[in-house]
Length: 317
Image 1 (cartoon, rainbow, N blue to C red):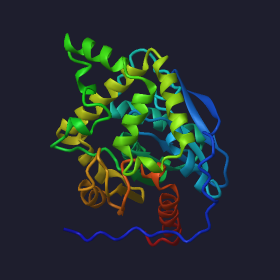
Image 2: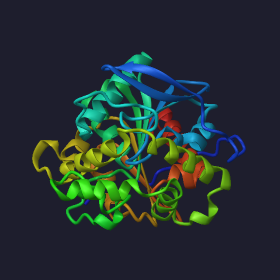
Image 3: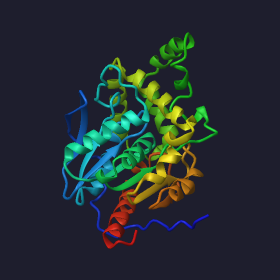
Image 4: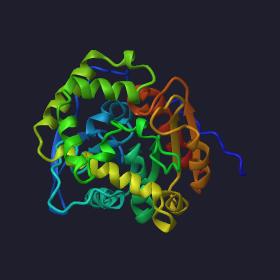
């Protein structure tokens, strides 16, 4: 088994971390008949595209985008069915279809991008990078949702989610989930995704509650979440070329794999295999960190990302 080269941390000066930063302004972009909502962080340098995870949105990247804005211009996408991007009829919510949406958006930027993805967004970003390598300068995967042959439903955002597509019982489960309040959903997310939920600032909790209230008014939100859950699990159980484990070796971009040591959703034990499977992969495990390191440790994640970019520029990655 090959030895993993440790991922370096940059010593570059970063902006002061301002957890009072509100979500970046959004704009809509026409992609395959979708009106895809993208939050834009004005910055200096080439584009960086951020892809959220299952049940997340573009706001998951607010703080990290602020930390990196002296080096890149940030574009955080709401995948169809999430945030403010309404899906078109017939959208199937598979990882491959989400990846196509990301690729189509990257094409609109007119140059290769630094691509960053968290959880399901990490899996989607890896597929996009493997499919269209000429569009991706570097790839950063934060707790990517790689296949696990021993998936645990209690690690999902809600273990009932996979049941929503079943006949007969599915309708009952969907009604039960619909009864959850925005406060309930936010509390559930904090407990699952953060190693220490107590560190989350009150304003971020309020933003999450407001976002969940907005989702409750979207007729398509629960269907998008359940279908994307099934799409993710289907990939996990699919053998052969479509499995993410078979996709990762085709990623040519330098790739940083970041994992929280206390990730409750995707086991950190998958970290070494993920990094080794990537031709140019390196791993950094963050202590006292959960599933959304870019939200929990934005400054450290920024230093890791900048460390990769600097090493790539020096041709030492």
